[in-house]
Image 1: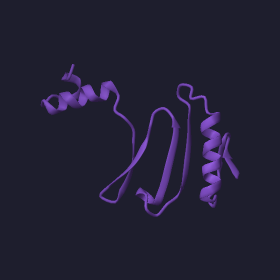
Image 2: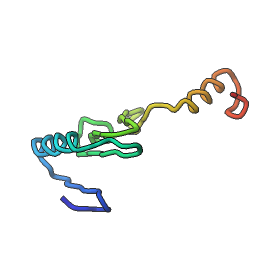
Image 3: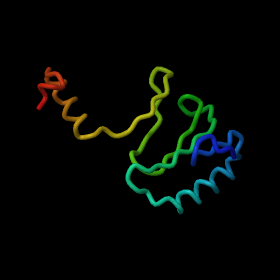
Image 4: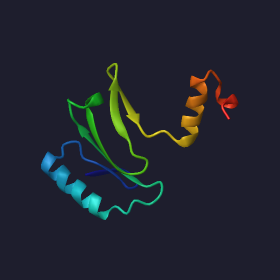
Length: 97
């Protein structure tokens, strides 16, 4: 694997079996502190954007495909939910409180 940045490793041709072994070790090793995450990506023609994704840590992310466009999504924060609620009532973000 190549280290493309401090602590960031990549291997574009890792076999599924090796990928699963590496993920199992990372899952056992990862302590999950605040603002810490491990992201694993690999080519997958069946996944949105042609790339599969696994994430350990917070915030949780998921790939979704909308109109053939890959989106990386995470849960809404309470503040974002409050703003969206105000927008559905016809108020702008500043008037929502």
